[in-house]
Length: 578
View 1 (cartoon, rainbow, N blue to C red):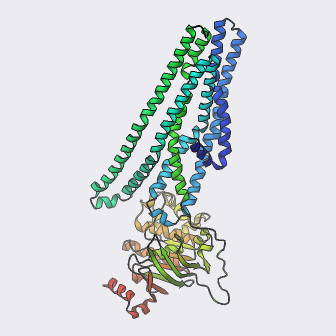
View 2 (cartoon, one colour; view 1 turned 90 degrees about the vertical axis):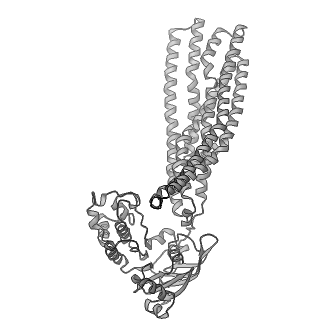
């Protein structure tokens, strides 16, 4: 448990001094908690001895009020130092996690890790933040209080003190065995939570497909099985935990009764006075309360270990290296030879053990349009994604303006590239903020001008609050064509020199297609284009067409030259025409 507490304190980083300072306040708070009992004992003893005076009574009253006020002040100081620091710690940690996630390769998000990320954010961090950070100093308080009670028992009589110490040892033994049980279950409980979260997300995101294919029974069974598994795991935990919890309560009851019995026995033998007998009646039910509360809190903290393991596992995921120091300066032409805007040189890449791109080489001149065509699964989207460094290549190099993209900062690279995909994602925010995120320093006039160029200004103004209308998560409250035009407005506002297009009109209706094509024309003016083409008629005028099959460039050239070659491209065109 000391190891867990040490890990928890280490998590606090720059706030570590505040947490440790809270131990000092907890120490004095633990003393102040017992002061009223001691004052009560003094009051009773003075009355029974007949030595109580007005002055003593006044002093007792002042001391009692002072102890309560001091306890409140120490409690407040402790909250400021510890609980407030806990919220700051995890606010910083969430920001660091966001920064970490954006630097991870896209493959991390397609390997079943979404449930893990969701559990870390929604369960692990919240649990530690709300249940653990606020009790660190309380544990110190409980230990100090228990130590004071044992000392008080020795003051009463060494035999009573020895008995209290013996039962405190029994509490420690039973409590540690209880904690071992909870630790053994904590990892499985966290894994079960992660699996359940993954299944719930999968069910919710795919509900449309599930309904349309009448798979509710099958998918509901999988979800129900996960809930049943979670239920069984929780019941198993309770079955293993409850005996130790009962044993702890039994120790409390037997220990309290044993102290009372020994006190009564010593009183009847005349070993202790009636004053001490009355004093024991005041202290009796508080003798083991602190150690009992200590283990009750520690039982909650055992989950912390598994939570910290999962948080650290996400943070350990390898980021894309971002150590580049070069910048994209307009010095592309050296020795009288223009440097291509984009250049792939002997690029090979695979997602896992399977290589999906083999020795891909091509170049894209500034202001030109290069189209990637070919059958599904050939590697077109992978080629485009590698340009944005969603993954790092295994061999070869990709250069933008003559610079290897691994040698420039990721932020600088993304400033050069705008991307429009078929699957648009809009955030649950205002229309204005969804567009302005491309360039946060843009003026409102700039945002509106981008919306006009993207042919979405008119329908935005018809929304209930215009640009200030909050749209649903993923753009659920807008049609597919409207979502696409807003995403294009975002790219127009960004105004990057390179544009990657994944045929934005491939899955929209005819009414929207013309508006989107006009918006794309505005976006692509004077830009370097890399287009993933699904409708071949849209890339007839491309400066260069690359036919990608099985991760290789099988053909390259213009539309006319490829038709004349009567190869794969000509066959694809014939299929679409027919």
